[in-house]
Image (cartoon, helix red, strand yellow):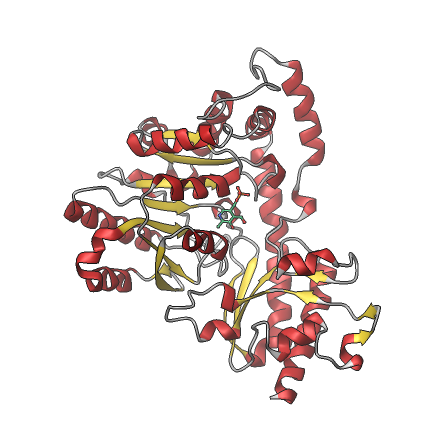
Length: 422
Ligand SMILES: Cc1ncc(COP(=O)(O)O)c(C=O)c1O
């Protein structure tokens, strides 16, 4: 869907609320330029920065990530806890570490929240894994439901390979509460004990550094209470520095599992290019505090403006809105308007209604708006399959406010068109 749209996307005309790209203004290009000089001039610290690296990651970057987490008490992590954990760098962002999990773990059942990070869960399914999805509420994956679903599996619980939970969920931007985190780890620990092997819990913290609502309780990393050593966190510098650095990292207890992940990185052509690891190390050491402040402030402002437009123009037709406290997505549930690719709402916004007064003349198509239909985000075999047809993910990351303002106006028109056509 996105590929088709991207091929004839018209900058300044069409509006892309679909992509998970960060806002270009948040990328510290001038600091990255400085970092290049610093890194290339300081070969004692940033060794062999234009050569091959290794499968674990460059030590300067690993040290910088460790300091970043400890100095800023990210997730409440301290030197003591992190001293007991290892950090590895993936070949190509957090995505590549997630991909590696599918190589390292035997095929079986993956437990995740619904709606889900469909890019990864689709990949898992294509690679022979089965999803067991647990609907989330305002606190994230519902652990009571999770326990019931595991019990209902009976002996098939033996096929559970991992729990994969996005702490600020994509698409919904619902923040997993600390209580739920703990319950999740308890459930996975209890299951691991019963199975006589570890069922790892992978917390994907891609957007956790982007919590911009000051009212949100500070997330507590589950690495702090992990007696069974089943907790792993996957993080990325994409959302707070620059996706092009392609730096994703994984933290957890050393052992056979992490060694297998490192082997997989080696097989994939080593961890991320040394040069971007060195640049990232420098940026973490010199820039990250100011960077986090400005990125969070930027998305905070946008979240408030976009939420006001959603309420004002789409409010009547909306049953639920999540997001706006972290990351850069809102996830909308309409009362009666369908959003899937065959819907009138979608057709209006992609200018494929077949009506020239809406679509525009051939060769001069009216402005289009792209979003991610909910049907792609929910487990089509799960409880949310029906409601997913009335949901959508709207990103306020990539586009500027002026364009988003226009896009929500067009969504208001699309909603009116969908109602008239019903
Ligand atoms: C939930 C989630 N995990 C991981 C990633 C991938 O991050 P990276 O750019 O480090 O591959 C994304 C990117 O959008 C994401 O949304």
